[in-house]
Image 1 (cartoon, rainbow, N blue to C red):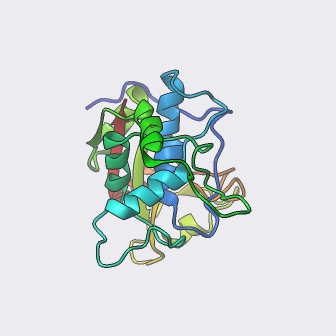
Image 2: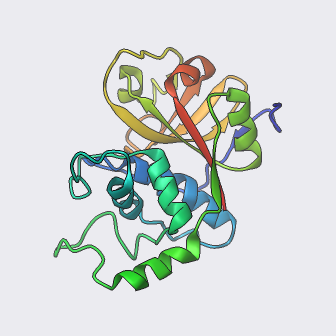
Length: 229
């Protein structure tokens, strides 16, 4: 499949990079704050100043994912599956960060309204479907050029972990580093590689982004999903 353009860069001034801190909420950031927020803003269904609830997709996914040996929705360091979060967004929809903030207030309460009201709010922003884009780099480029950002994941290596402004171009992936699974988003490409949006704040990489060459992206990113509203 041929890409629709030589290059694509979906980054926008209103679409700032977040910081998950010491939590395992990367799937929430990748799905809600990166991929879904971009789509809903572009569709005119979310203001540029609004954010979607990272905490909601992250915690809801943990309640419904494949990890069933013990409950961990309340464990801040624990993560979840990409498809679990996308399934929640498709079945129930998503709420804004104002409804369920990522950073809880002084009282440490989450949503204090009733469940019916919460899911009525979520139902206003459901995704229609999501698609498994496999590991075909041409398919990724085509999706980025014609549809939008891509939700993906990798097992972090040292080059990714230690990315700085001077070391933000990744070319050789170390599959044996064993630094843990992590969810990110692809938000653009050129002929040589992909723009990767992370959730470790703007002090990481190039203001929150790195540039993964095809030689890095192909072995590193083991899942890739695109969303349609």
